[in-house]
View 1 (cartoon, rainbow, N blue to C red):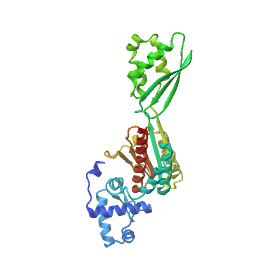
View 2: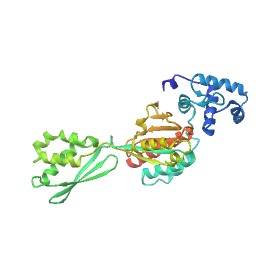
View 3: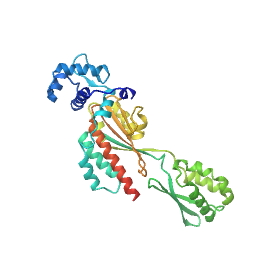
View 4: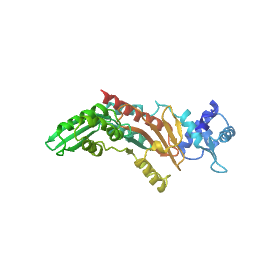
Length: 340
């Protein structure tokens, strides 16, 4: 990261470096100077391009995989390309996005899936949406009696989830005691993260002792049965076949990658933070793979926290960034819809 930030290419070097990277992305092969002159119709000699390549190699933006032949972008070079040269947000999928949002479905997940199918077919990469409940909070708690011996406690969360918990009334617990407990919880637990409910409820014991009969038993039941939330990560993957059917990725790599995208936070596994302002991380450290992960931070965002793109080493970064913008806009539109 520091190596990227500490280097700034001249306009001339940036122009040719961009062409080198994009030719490598297109062909998947080392870029030779003669082919590059021919491909782009350059008004300079192949010797000039070789000299520029040698200069880019000295600053570790290019690598030479063999003693003879062309050069390929290094990890540092790819990061520079992505951060400073690649992204044109109007170039690829804007019309597709407009068409998709114009026929919005009821579910943000459904719309994300449609978007993922569109861009993955065009660009050939997998998309992973990761969520967790670490910031999901309690927004409402209500009590509905069923009969003399049981009631339903209804919890509504900030993500729009509704939890129905059965509360069995024992001989020592009256419905009135339960109503008082619900009122106290409503006054003091609204906007508390779900995974903190049990601990915060337990801290209310002194207040319950003064206002609720048999408060120990009621508190125990709530902590054990009603407020029993654990932190969890959920992932939704689209177009995994782009990985599974890839000829350039080994079976062993595929198994590891599928475990990553199905069971873990992609964002958390990437150590390199490319761009804090845009909440972006890149991972080029895996053989034959590129991973781009974006942190999504919108209020009432249905708990979607990350959108990640997984593809081959020579993934098209322009299309990847445009895809990320599409997914972010879908979630943003869903947030607006949910707040109306």
